[in-house]
Length: 261
Image (cartoon, rainbow, N blue to C red; front, side):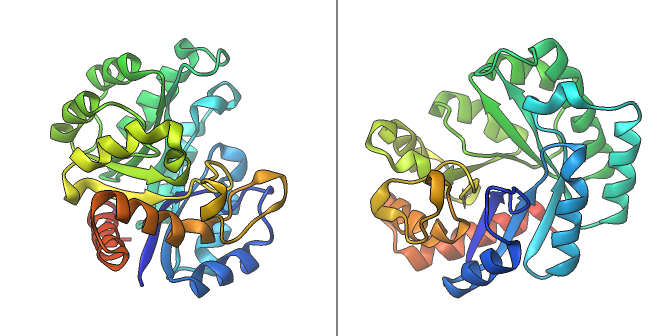
């Protein structure tokens, strides 16, 4: 099969050595992945992975809302220069989050809207994190429109929220954590989404799926990105699809969203 992991963090030190992780991903049928930075501190690590595996790793450079308070003067220009250096790179992970109390939305939103502006001006797709902050997200969009295509990663919102986002250009990725029984409402939302807007992801080393779907266990309950095929197969069953059909569909969707990567 030909799976695409639309969102992970291979640079995260909680994962084993990237060369081993990538080998194991390829062995289970993953052909490409989108590796997202979380702050300026790991931009170089993501870049290094993309240069070492240009056919497998698509880089995304951005500032996660949890790290918005750590930005240093001049970061927008440095981000622009890095994206210009990598014409196939996207912008991410960025967004808004009310699950945490610090940094506040007052700090998060200017960093987020600046990244939206850069993504739009450079004509790059953007990967967005939004947790318990839907009103803040739409308010940010009123200040700075998103680019024509963007990914809502690990989308856990309602179908009503999704229907507001779809006309704006949103795609939605599903992570294995949502296969826990208590998250069945998220699976139901994905059943109602347009099939041409669905992607799958691991968000490794986070968002661990149920134990029965863990085919590559790691210590400390970290999520290995090679778990993606079992996550995808479980989602396919919930959608009434065959795994190979979902793999092809979500890979096509990822390539359309993140073109020309």
